[in-house]
Structure formats: C-alpha cells, structure tokens
Image 1: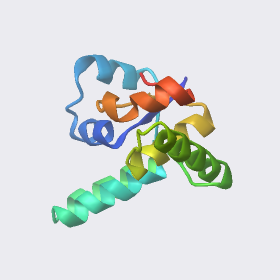
Image 2 (image 1 turned 120 degrees about the vertical axis):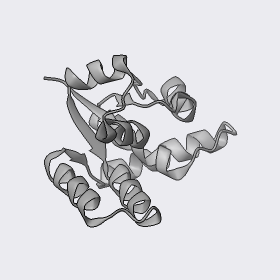
Image 3 (image 1 turned 180 degrees about the horizontal axis):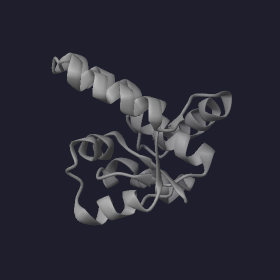
Length: 131
C-alpha cells in the first residue's frame, strides 16, 4: 500500500473523522504518515486549547501507531534549500510549512493538504507532490 503524508490540517480533520469524502477515500487507500512538525503542532494545540487527559491520551496512542517522518541531516539540508530558493523568489514560506515540504521531498512522499496555496510554490519549483 502506498504512503502519503498528512499536513496538520488534514491530520486534525482525520482524527475528528471530518475529512471531505474524496480525501477520506484517498486516506483509506494509503498508509498515513505525518511529519515531526505535525507532532509539535498537535501538542501545541492540545496545550493552547486545554485538552483533557482523555483526549490527549487518545492522541498519544494514535501517535504511537502512525509513522512519523523525523528530522535528519537530509531533511535539514532540504529545508535550507527550500527556504533559500523561496526567499530568492520573493516567496518566503512559513518555517513549519517548509519543514513539512522538506520531509515530503526528502522521503519522496506526496503531501495531502487543504492548504494548497501554502505549498503550491514548493510544488511548482521544488518537486513537492501535492494530492
């Protein structure tokens, strides 16, 4: 079964069982992965929104099961290339989006996101595949 990377927005909807039907079908047909950045963003949300122990525990159990694309020197170099190229084009992107794109590009996996505009520049210029 092929692997796909879920952006944080899709991960949130997936966990809430609120994915739009075409995306839900795509997720069902693939192995779901997330990036280390999404782990951080999920924990940030949990702290900001005062999730209870039950909800936080459920997320932790899910995180124990889902493959996580982690940081490594290759991802760090990819991030540097992406960030520099975007800035040279006058299209500086948010750091977290750049990290997620770097994880996807370095691992050769496509990204599923509802924030197409946030990642379109990486798809056009750097080879990021967006589903």
